[in-house]
Image 1 (cartoon, rainbow, N blue to C red):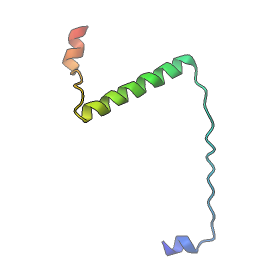
Image 2 (image 1 turned 60 degrees about the vertical axis):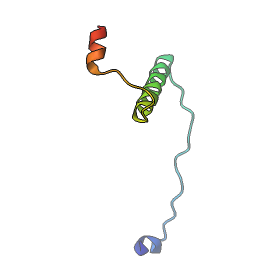
Image 3 (image 1 turned 90 degrees about the vertical axis):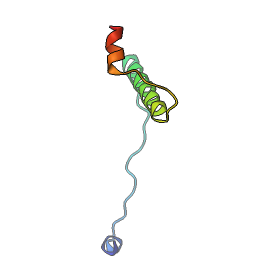
Length: 60
């Protein structure tokens, strides 16, 4: 760590966050993914029960 501190290197943030625009199809996919991840989180917390793969197949 001392070696890193002894170097005269100054790092500056280079990531300037720019708002990205998505097509309606991309935004729909992103929204669906966010909803799915929220459901997984609720399942991990024990607040909801997700369907098993067999239950999904039975619906077909």
